[in-house]
Image (cartoon, rainbow, N blue to C red; front, side, top):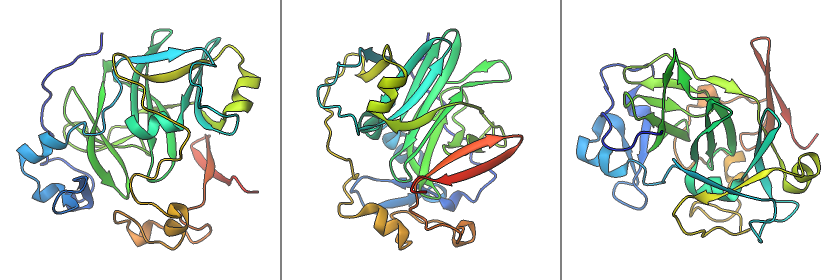
Length: 260
């Protein structure tokens, strides 16, 4: 059973990154971004799960969402003989899915600002973790929190960066981002995420821009980030907005540009 209720606040005395580098998106409030080191507890709590994570996922057969096209992107995950497809347009609106497959607690994550879909094993040292959304970003990437300790986690790295679990890492699980038509060809019996149980389906095929409009990828290529990114962390070998496939093997991570 996934726990629900009141969850502890993050312990900001423990952190591996500057608290000022973690910025809350106030969603049109003032200021638009609010550093963690200046945020009061009531503001932190009010922004928690403003982008609602999925705690109880709802799935359907491949034809469950009529707006899905063969070129629609999905994040795919396979557990044993079972395949699951997570439409990017659904993940855009939720970003986090907590689930259990064949006894394995799984965390499905996606950050619309950096187009990063990553799947993790959400158990740490034998302790089950359940994740929510802080509504904050670090290096313009989703920051999650766990219900058990309130610690903050950097999505793309699976690393706790603030709180009791600072320095801990989630174990990566294999996943892939691909076109829906290709995924269906590989896994014709796949289950398709349709949304959150008990919540109306408001998704469609329109590409989500989180209100920034225009050519978002072009904006990132010009290094005009919506939320700050440390220039020292940028790699000039590729433009910042380049979409890549990453493979981790033997302790090394390799990025493959998708346009090659």
